[in-house]
Image (tube, rainbow, N blue to C red; front, side, top):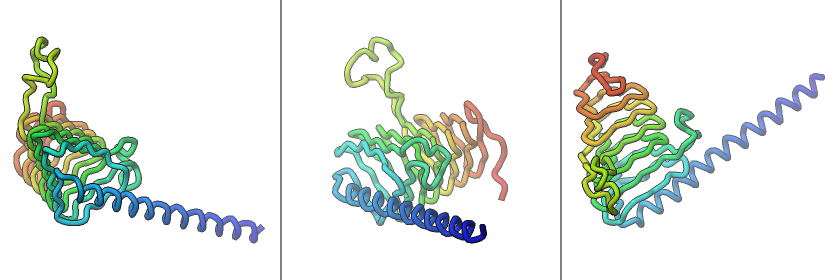
Length: 213
């Protein structure tokens, strides 16, 4: 009986080792593929190696501009962050868009669509399943919505400050601003300005209190 248990434990150990090795190989593979892609794409400038832990969906117009700083982390799928891990990270850049990912920021399995300008500040963290959008994509006028090219669709820059934390499932819409070291609670919808060092939550997001140390 003891020998059977020992044998079972041994094979469990081997199975776990295989899982760890496979996971590390996946990280290396997706990292190499993504960094090669980013270095040849005409819209992209990178300041260093980008940590990529899954298959990112890149929708980058070569006329736009994507700037990636040092030590940026892009998590796509459930390997690192199970929250929002049922979906992939999507980065979409329009022909006039400017998307800036500053040093040390991290994004998990979210959707970012940039038609004008979006900045993710240094050290900011974007939780799984978020949506960051700087455009309405369609006009509020019915006759314009029927026309090609989406004339009349409004855009406004989005800015997420240094070391801010955006919880899972948050939507930040055009003109939204999240201040320095601020926190936005899970599932919130941000359409205005979150002040520096504040905690906001809700739909629409409202100030809850100042951030504690």
